[in-house]
Image (cartoon, rainbow, N blue to C red; front, side):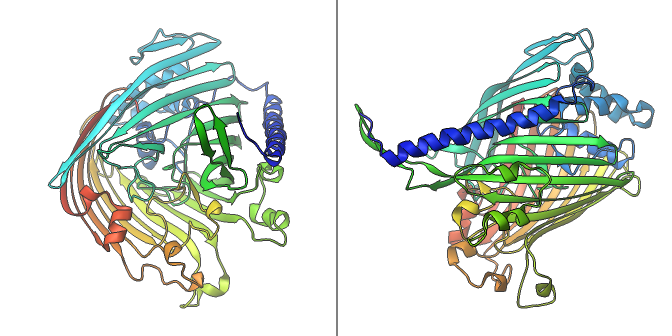
Length: 555
């Protein structure tokens, strides 16, 4: 027998109406998209940010061979195929020519109407003038060993995608297994986040990661319901705006590029607050006994990004976002071009406001081989605090430069990131800049700064040898300390956690989607014991020399 209160039944009815409303909103966007049905046929199937084709396109952009915007990483297979096809091979060196031919074995599938070409190996693949699909397995693993022990992470699954006219469909499922808990939300690394961790007595952890979506491409843009990773913000070592490190979140995704010099992106995502709503939680009684059914508070993010290209190889983007926790998704936040902070002041008039942010990103390649970039993420800013040494604004700032092929096939880069205390935090736990407790912004979270240097060489087709150095440090977690007033907090004072890491890595994509990795890193992680345990896996604490190697099929 199932025991439910009358209030809960009413809440369920209200929830049904909210779901219908959200479906209507989504249908409105699709209706808008269909109005462009006279555009050329295409599908929007995103290429994951981890795909090495982005490294290749970024390199060619630095050499002024193409003009590719790297401020956001979530391009479609069709977009990348068009860029690859347009490249003038006479401008490429021998290695780059081989890499271009290598990638076209895969992405030419978006440009042809049959498999009658020099195609990559797939488990299953079919192409004709109206329908295409591809199915591939996923299998891989990483193994790490040092003087303190060993750890492994392996995964298995499958992925598939299909195109029918202007519609794109895709899905993937990965079952992850870790011998040590390497993917905790607060660990200061760039491992992709997981959810619903299953822990075992021997320290092992299992979790799933599912991604997929359905989209409609209307020629100058696309709209879709997507659950996948994406990145906003220029970087070579972790974005300061939306880093994509969290478990993938379901979102309404809208993109449009009506002219060559302007593009616009908008998302509305359903986040996981992992904060229990006691009023909506309830007891369940059945043949198995009585148990308590916990229900989380709703949590959402709406964000937009306007990108302008006033000059060739120069991009400036600005936008804003808001985290809100109403019981249901609000219609006003489905208006893509809104300034959400001002909107929130109306919707939350007389009560504590939601959590809003603003950001700007600059990416310039004024000289051949050189890339300069910067990002600014602002949570709260007051002009009078800028010149006040005793009060601080809440921002995360990144600046960097990258050089490619000034010496053929070599590259180097520098990046500096600083994030003030509480920049991604909030005093209301349902309004933090997080999903599943993973920070949506920079992987070092708040009250942190980092210097990143890299030097690399590409000796052959899809090979990369990279030497890098990271120095990172963090101040206390002021959400635990409850420090007030928060604008008076001195960032990084005291420093409670530091990390210095020197790494040499070799990567080789042997054939499409088969990767081999081997590397060695010397790392020194020090700090207060409580913060070491919170932010660093045990076998990486102190001075360690770690050998790592791995291989995978698919991402």
